[in-house]
Amino acid sequence: MGFRDPSQLRDPNRRRPTCSLDGALGALWLLIAACMVSPAWCQAPIIEDDSSPTAEDSEQAEDTVESREDFGVEAIQNPCALPQDDPGAWIDWVQRSIFKSVCSSARWFDNLFGNDAAFIEAEPTIGWFRGAVVWNERDGVDLDGTLRTKFDLPNVDKVERRVRGFFGRVSDEEFTRETGSPLERRPDVFRNTEDEEWLLGLGYSPIKNSRRRLDIGGGVNVAWPPDVWGRARYRRHAFFGDRTLGRYRQTLFWKQEDGAGASTIFDLEHMIRKRFLLGWNGSATFSQDTEGVDWLTSFILYQALTPGSALAYRFAIDGETGADVPLNVYSIRLTYRGRVSREWLFLEVRPEVAYRKFERGGDWDVVPGLYLGFELHFGQDAGQARRRL
Image (cartoon, rainbow, N blue to C red):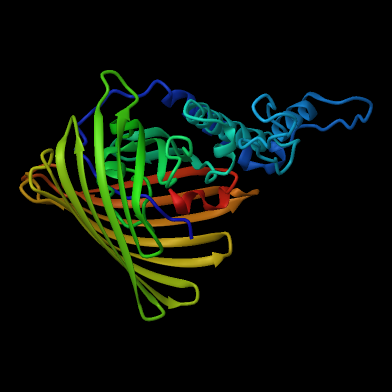
């Protein structure tokens, strides 16, 4: 159904330096949002002229074949080629350009250790790019732009092909601690986007099968001074009958700024009827950066509307033992998510209300919020990007 990303609250007074790319990301996505109000705006005028090749024809020709200097006269298929749904639609150009930039960078790095022959046979580069306008009554309006991508590095790992690269803009909780169910892992309208960082790293999967997976990785944040991180994450799932799925995840992590910690997560999902899925999530995180155990539990009901759209109804309780306010948030969220115009483009609208207590002895406040955004998947296998990241 496409709902992912954890919801995790941080200290509203905590700030980190923001990335200079935030404004550009926000402006780009406001433009895409305006475009989506009327799909016809996405169309560029097409002038048919069969008299001579166009610049676009030349670009597509370059995508089809690659340099032959290392392979004699045999043409090499460009591993970063991506066909457009509609050559006259600029939204397709945006998706294609993002993919080619990411893929070409990964290809250049991997080719330092070999050549294109291995990269062409590698797992496809996939990712997604999300932009949104986020509002809540306490903090006002904010723009959120997030990129997440994974890419294979076959020349780095020529034997087992278990090494992959990662690049993305995520919060500390979302990536390092990974709290929250994969089904409900969505951005929080009460989260301060200033605590997000651009992270770059490498991962290795010594165990990877249909039931179990172990990922070990590390890297740095793209900032100065750099902040080093490392993580080991074990995942296992099991079926209970035909309608119930259980998941267990254990994560050990270390971050230069926040220190070491561990996160334990349990998920249960039960198919009630053909179009309804009920889920429960419980997570607990302890680290040198927390006062005690940072915990969250939630219940979520999914309703499939069409093959490309769904609703999610979520109730969650959040807190941290040892903090001034051990139980500080009750929240109710309604999410609509559906495809717009393209198979790889999604609209998401999410009103949310939180019942929050910010300080010991203070009053409980009702704080409404709203999330309005688009999510663009890219890659040779764009339809699987969200599921596999």
